[in-house]
Structures are given as structure tokens and as C-alpha cells.
Image (cartoon, rainbow, N blue to C red; front, side, top):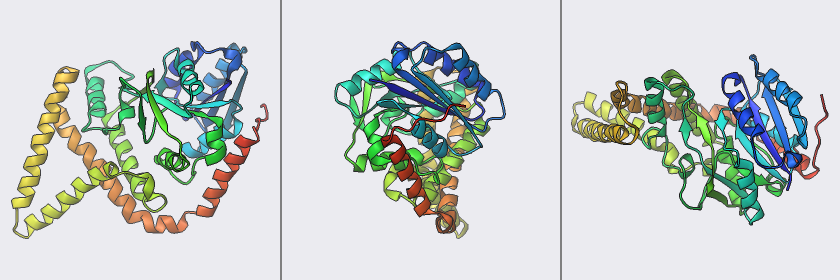
Length: 357
């Protein structure tokens, strides 16, 4: 089976080199592998890295490179889908790493009957120092990210509601179409919801794994959580069914905190005290468990403060998204979004080939 490995990137010069090295080392035949690289308006050396890779690797079935103005992830992925020719389409983030048998294992599972496959996607840190290890512990911990199975290595095959770095039979996009380009951060949730509605299952396989780099600073992590939360709130007005209750857990904590603070101001402090005691005890327990599973360093005690900050950022972002949702929905051209989705469906079905630059 032919494979289209798709990567989109925006200013990823620090991390893209590692992924390109992983791609070059894949065990799956290059003669059956197409690479689709989309540059989303980078201002660093990302386009040059893509061009250099193409120049020194001429034995692939095909390498397609597209550069476009800065746009969101959904638009970049739609561009990749419209230019992919393979029987199997694999999506890999530019700030990821994959083992040398990644493509081979994805193809194996699809040849054995699956339509959408992937595996656990543990986080890794780009730097190896104590502060980076602390950021990694914050992101890896259930209290810092989520309980979703695809975020961690799996010991057995499971069918989940979503996957990172997944491989899809071409027909999945032929039937479902592409991404909603008016969504940010939640474009995967909405697309995978449509796939589930069509009856497709997401096989998370123990023989498939990949890694994703965490944000390089705590400030960047806070911005990421805020943005994630914001788009959860906005998506409520477009496709609420693609979200789960877990997406609103930080919002629930923020609302409970706001309500109990207001009650405390009016003289009833008992509920606020109980809420804070329960949260602090749970926070302390999770922080101590991080020491047990990830080792100790001088920055690890800061996890006790980092977890609440991440939760507040996510929860407040969700609240702001909900408050801004009505005017945003009014400006959201749903007809145009559906048109884009159908355009990708038609392009994949017709096996569109991009014009070479």
C-alpha cells in the first residue's frame, strides 16, 4: 500500500530536524512513501529544512512541498489532504518524534482490517535539565493533562474516541471530508466526531507509538492551556457533541471557586474552605506522586503551584470562550466551513495532485 506522510509546520526549525531524521530512517519502502510538507508561513528556516530534505532524498515515491501564508492548523491539514495521493494518509505534528518502524506498523494494522490506527503518544522534553523535567512532569501527569489513553503508552489494543498522529485509510476522508477551518485547537475533536458518526473506530495499538515535545517554558504552557480552553468554549456553539465532560473539568473548578468566593464575601465561608481544602489535599497528593514516578529535583515542589495555575488558565479560557461564543457564532460562516469540508472530500476522492513548484 502507498502511504502519504503529511507534516505541517510553522516556525519549527528547532524540532523539525529531528522529525525529518526520523522520517529518513523509516523502514517502510521509500518507493511506496509520499511526503507532503506544508509550511504555514514560517519566518525561520523551516522552509529551507524542507527543501534541503527534498534535495538530498530523491528516492521517495514523491515529495510535495507547499508554502502558504500563515494560517491555522485546520487549513494546513486541509492543504495536505488535498495534495496527498497515498492509499493511507498519516498525520504527524512537526514537533513530534517517531520510531523507525512507525509507518510499517501503521500499514500492518491497516492491512489487517483497521481503518484508523495510532498508538500512545507520551510527551518528551526538547531540553534535558531539571526545569524541563519539571515541565514534563506537569504535562505528563493526569492532573496536568488528561486521562485520555492516547497520551500514554498502551499495553494492549484499545478502541478510543480519538488519536494523535493517526493513520487513516484514504476512504475515511473520502466519506467524511476535511477539517473545519474556522476551528482552532478543537479541529481534531470535530473531525473525529464526524468520523465516529460514520461508524469508524480509532484503534490504539501497543506496537505503534510516537512522542510529542512539550512547550519550552511554563509561560508557553499557560498560553497553550488558555487557548485550549478558549476553543473548548467557542466549539460549544459549533459542535458541542464533539466535546466530553472532561473538557469542562477545569471550568467546573473555576466556577465553583468563583461561586464560593462570592458566598464568602457575603459571609458564608464554609463551602470555600471545604473546596480549597479538598483541592489542596488532592494537589499535594498528585505532586507527591510525581516525585515517586518521575524522580525528584529542586524544582519539582513547584508543581504544587503549577497545577492550579494551569487549571485556572484552562478554566478561565473556557469561560471566556463561552462568553464570546454567541457573537463569534454569529460571525462564523458555517456554510463556508461545510463548503471547505466538501472541497477536501472531493479532492481526496479525485486523487488531486499538487502542481510542482
